[in-house]
Length: 555
Image (cartoon, rainbow, N blue to C red; front, side, top):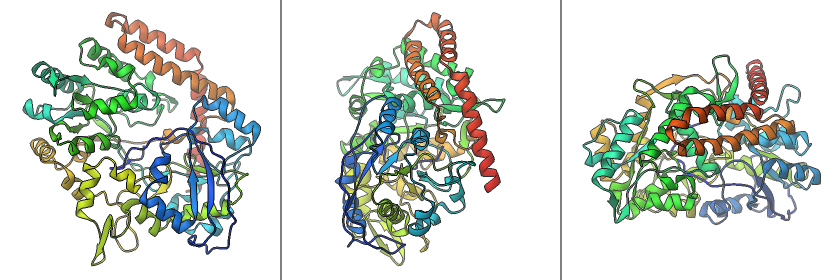
């Protein structure tokens, strides 16, 4: 899974809007010019994380519109994905651009997508440069080796994702900086602090709080179950000892993790509101300072951390710990496997009236100028260049971490999650990094309390804990989270039925009497099989092997 280092957490669902398109004018291949007629693209985002507010009202987006003449319109749509896509393909009333995630196969099979090879060749030199020697992985399949999607995220590497467990720094300090290696250590710290301080700021102290809505469940329940038991998180899947792609929840180790959550619930250490609270309520609860423990994603935590800092509640910020279920286990570090393919990005539809303008727009995003704008902001406002060195303006960096609205207002990282981008240590032609999120600036952003806690544990920043205590893990089929679902509707229905069962069953297993847990788990596994998981896993294994074979031949 590609690391999203220090990026803002984004929110997205489904979108579809009517919009007009302007007239195209001739442009140079390298970059679109601001004097072009304005054009509005309708965009459908089915899978990913993106918000209309994140782009349309930001300072950076205003510059983008001025530079490219392009406006993207985004709206949300609720409903059952497979059924809605069937209606969409039947009507053929497609938007201009679609980000369908694992559902791209449905639209591809319906003939909704435009081949992009010639457009990229003519209008996308920066796109080609960004993908570099990973460009061949954009090809759709052996049978149809054209490019239909522009892959999202880091185009070159896949590394460790900072996902683990968080303990409030106030608890770590009060308890004398206890060992934090296993879930038992985490549990003991939560229990001890709750006994000493049953209330925080007049509110009931909450132990471990989770989230059971669709996105929160994956982030706070499923991902921790995987990473705490020795594997990297790859969406729904893992590769078993027989090289078969399977639903990871079937692992015995994850059964024991869910058993631990059941234990935490019956001990009064797991927040009972975890099963009913929504994202807003959950976030507000964290920002109130009353929650001791979390199992969150590093990126998502940036917002509540900025709120807590802005309110002067530095002691209520969190430390990030790569905890494991059992003593002696190692937290999985994913080796660099390269870009995992184009199928998780955007596609241009056959009804897009100006596909060349969209490719020019993406090419600008991929250019050095575009990447600097998206990652660093506007020169003189967010960054400055002195003696050839690009640096963040000091007061601005503090705003990133103290003002929870600043990043959205500026538009920082708005295009980083579901568009191609440079990440990590990639540098432009001047030698400056594309990303301003260096270790040094991150350390500088920490409060006195955070630095104090880190010092007691012998580290400079939280990321160091993960790198120092991580085992190597080879992704045999690259990142399985980017693997497409089979085209056949039968398998899409199986997938949705299994996903629904997993979320419902995990909730029931956590709440049920401890004496019934083993029987409940066995019933869950039987039902998963009856809903067709084995048949889907065979198809997913075939697709993973086909993808790997194709890449090995073309590399």
